[in-house]
Structures are given as C-alpha cells and as structure tokens.
Image (cartoon, rainbow, N blue to C red):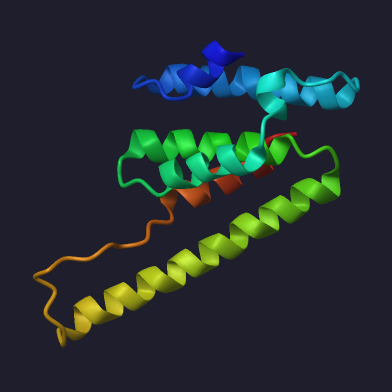
Length: 139
C-alpha cells in the first residue's frame, strides 16, 4: 500500500492513474465486504487532508493531480454514503470559495486600479474540480 501511495506522486500520469485505481478498488472492496482497511488508510485524516489540500492548490498539474487523487481517496474512505456526500459538499464549498476569490482577483486585474507589480497569489480551483469529478465517478 505504501508503494501505491508513493506512486500517486509519480511524474508519470499513467503511474498516478493506475495507483489511484488500485487504491480506490481496495477501498471499495473493503467497504463492500466489511474488511478492515490497511493501516495507511486508518491514519489521521487531518494530516492526509492537509497534505492533499496543499498539493491540490499547486499550479503544477502533476501536484494538483496528486492532491485531487488523495482527496478523492479520503472521500471514498468514508464508511457511509452520507459521509461521502458530506465530504463532497465540503469540497463544493471550497470550490465555490476559490472561484469567488479567483473572480475577485480577476476583477482587480481587469480594473487596472491597483499596482500589481508586487505580484499576488491566485487561488486555483482546477485540482478541487478534479477531486470532485474523481469522487463522483467512483462507485
């Protein structure tokens, strides 16, 4: 299992995708047949979730992809359908916040009323969108 989690960080798309598929099937099988999940899945979700949100916010596609897959696995890990729905609602709320923040940043850029030479940080939503899509498309 540790190797599969490690492969989620691979630079090769197919390795990340395959590792995610195997891990998600393992979660689904454990849930279907009431089999305990390996210890890696039982670790604190706050630590895993923090890392996933850090990665999902990255402008680098590979890191955002890894974060999205981790968030999806955290969603799938929820034992009940209601728990998974609540987790998706949480992701949707974060997505709404990020898109509103993006709109505000774009409004400032387009208004050309502020000096933007110091730069800034644009909240990115593409990783959250992918996490929601992966979570909803899993059985």
